[in-house]
Image (cartoon, rainbow, N blue to C red; front, side, top):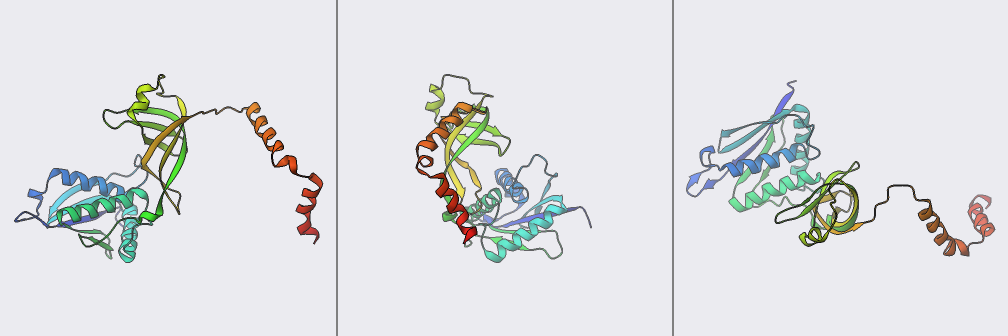
Length: 260
């Protein structure tokens, strides 16, 4: 089997009175398709992904994206499931957003998209202004998060952000009020900090939509073992629910299910 395959994204439509062709297809539209196609094929970390090569063809406009056949086979299964269920809720976040972006283009420009692969018995998804390839809003719920890690960037001319890196989730970008950064006296760059933030989280998978993260506040971050702090927690527990427990009765209750 050939180690290279491709996906084909065919677009039919018009520009005014002219049928859509590569000659009247704008470069910004090409860039948009390339970005979305990359997320369709590789929704996760892209640093180690295989090469994707590209060409545009007539008919009306065909985007041909070649890459490893392993990923083409996987993508073929995905579009088969999307077509069968007419639903994208099961997809990784970046793939779902790519389908939504293509759906938006179809509605805005009255284009018809056909997405398929080079496999002999390829699946196919068609997207036009009548389809509804959007995530179910109810699945994404408001949530609060705590991120701990090293700040790699902070600022921005119009929309300010803090970029924080942790080994568990990589780098996340958190929308931050410019007013907070203006009043923050210390240089936070490359320091290890904690950030409390809000955002959207998938109610079933727990996946975080990192594009929705918004800053609430900095939180104290103490990565070192703190015996005094742990002792204070134990003392609080003793004075509350532990102080009211009779150890013998508690132990007998635990054993009761085995002695009965």
